[in-house]
Amino acid sequence: GRSSLGAKLVLLGDMGTGKSSLVLRFVKGQFHEFQESTVGAAFFSQSLAVNDVTVKLEIWDTAGQERYHSLAPMYYRGAAAAIIVYDITSIESFERAKKWVQELQKRGNPSMVKALAGNKVDLEDKRKVMAEDARAYAEENGLFFMETSAKTAVNVNKVFNEIARRLPML
Ligand code: GTP
Ligand code: MG
Image 1 (cartoon, rainbow, N blue to C red):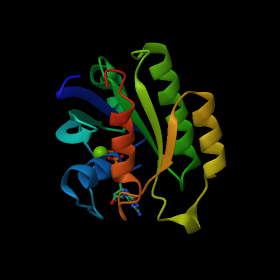
Image 2 (image 1 turned 60 degrees about the horizontal axis):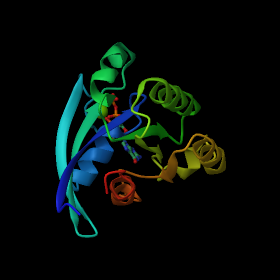
Image 3 (image 1 turned 90 degrees about the vertical axis):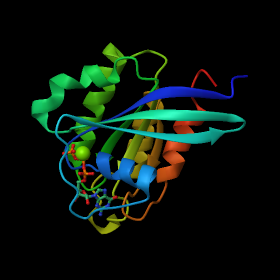
Image 4 (image 1 turned 45 degrees about the horizontal axis):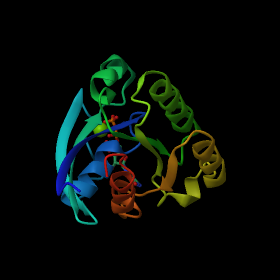
């Protein structure tokens, strides 16, 4: 097979769920308590190895604020993969994640690999979204599911690696 390939990946989800923090953890190994809210979108790239293939992820970290919603199609159009992020301490953010899933099902590339990430799992004492509910939703809708923490790094590399492993061109 090919020894290297590029794949566009988009992160979607409500404001404050930790999209930028997940990317910053994955790409730079950092976490900022006072991460600034994203304006428009931010671009990152990171290579990882899947078996003998180098996958260069071209990552679009979108802004979750409602006023940027209309820009989202520019970022998910042509994307090979999406991570839809919610915050386990916020039911509203889980509801918003479901809306993103619906939008991708309607307008996204049908072969897109999709992950549902329940972020901030370090805040277990403030949990509002049960993992079983999110997992059931993900299974019904063809996404894979993981709970993550950008703060403690739990499952962050794993979610990006799993995305890469599932890319249809691999
Ligand atoms: P927008 O750019 O506005 O869409 O937000 P975002 O989804 O990029 O969220 P961001 O990464 O800016 O994180 C929002 C806040 O949550 C910041 O204060 C982060 O420090 C915090 N945060 C992000 N991930 C985690 C996490 O896993 N655990 C905890 N405890 N806080 C987190
Ligand atoms: Mg952001």
